[in-house]
Length: 88
Image 1: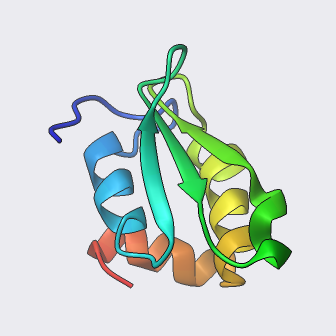
Image 2: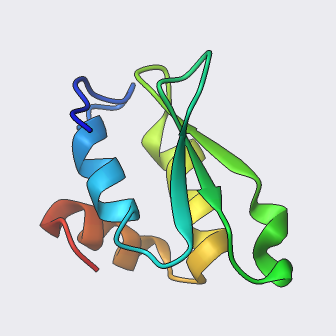
Image 3: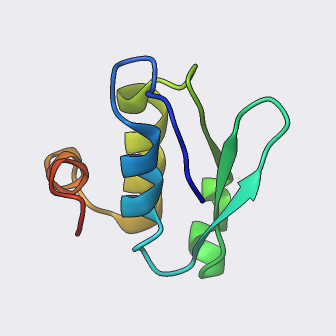
C-alpha cells in the first residue's frame, strides 16, 4: 500500500503506517473520512484503544502518539525514536 502525504505537523504518512504495522496485533482499515484507520486486535485489556485515524488532517503528537502509548505501553520518547528510525 503506497501512502502519500504528511500529517498536519509534517510527519510522512507512509512512515507512520510502515512503523506501526511492525507492532503485533495492529491492522489497517480503509476509512471514509481519513485515508487509514489503525485497529488494535489484541488482548481485551487493550481493546479500549479503539481506532486511530491517520490522514493529512491528523496531528501526530495529539492523536497517533497517545494511541500507540495506550496499545504498547511505550513512552513518548521511545515512540518518537521508532518513527524517526522506522523500526521499534
